[in-house]
Image (cartoon, rainbow, N blue to C red; front, side):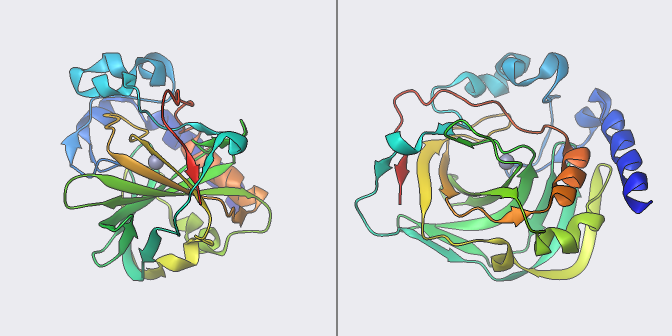
Length: 260
Ligand SMILES: [Zn+2]
């Protein structure tokens, strides 16, 4: 019965995500700057094929180094150096925000990631159903993006691709608490962020963009090769809540994907 109620609420919520609502809210997504949102969406007149035409601010969405991309394992270049990724994530207080496009976990200060000797501060993480990146042409049912920002304004996004299997203990704890409508859930709980992160030894890396407008090309993408699981029931609840909030695959052009 609980599940049925949840689905009804989720469906109603999706219906209420009107253009007007988007224009009036302030969101923080990949781009951590707070700004009034010019309406964009995953379906309809303002779908991803039209993002670059919506406003001049979104022109970069038609750029040459866009994300997400498909990762062809056979074509990826082997990294010659040692693992250049170090996570300094710890426990954090959480606010969970439904910004109309995704469920976002806003992280308190004090969590950082070091990649190629550059330090980035973790700002938030959020989810996409299905995955945005594909591997050998296949989507995963869920992708989680950990958004880290350096002092110079560039970003490193750590991405986790989840597959269907045993239930996720992280989702088990938080799924019922995700806001169903735009607004913020103030959590009094503390999350050990490391409990959400799988093995970081092997990953793909390439240079790309935010996967949402304004699609700024300032992102080092680090996509972990280890794929944790979530149950079919958990994945269904998440998809009912967020629907298809993934951008289609973009052209690789002359970029190189390396793997570690
Ligand atoms: Zn994302």
